[in-house]
Image 1 (tube, rainbow, N blue to C red):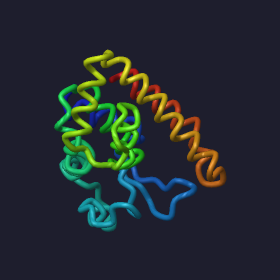
Image 2 (image 1 turned 90 degrees about the vertical axis):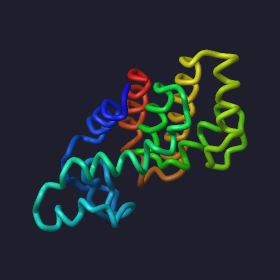
Image 3 (image 1 turned 30 degrees about the vertical axis):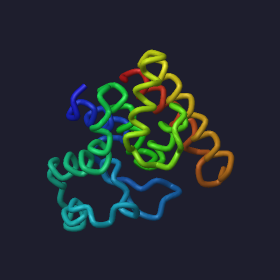
Length: 171
């Protein structure tokens, strides 16, 4: 799947090119871009003027912030899976989860050692095994998050699990 197709699927999971506010968040979100987390995104200038941001701003934002960090990964399916999770949980969290799955030190840095561990994992097992193992680790991550702070996250758990399974189905 190309970046463009992966982005299209991510935007579907994010609810499309709409502006909304989640019940537990302080600020609004547009196309999955949370203002509180990304206050300097150029699209906010358009939104504040009552205009729709150009799609290029959305595309470039997702590419630079969530896809590009995983370009070193040869497997397109794995890269797309990591990209999608990074949008929801952050690049650093995604890398740490990847590292846990492949047995690397979970430092949140996608360096040579992590890539080597991933390649070793894929040599011993199949790509599908990684996708399943990563998805299970992801669901465990979400469940743990909801258990630690149920007031803030419990209402999202079912959606996160469904999103995880949906992403796994297209990886």
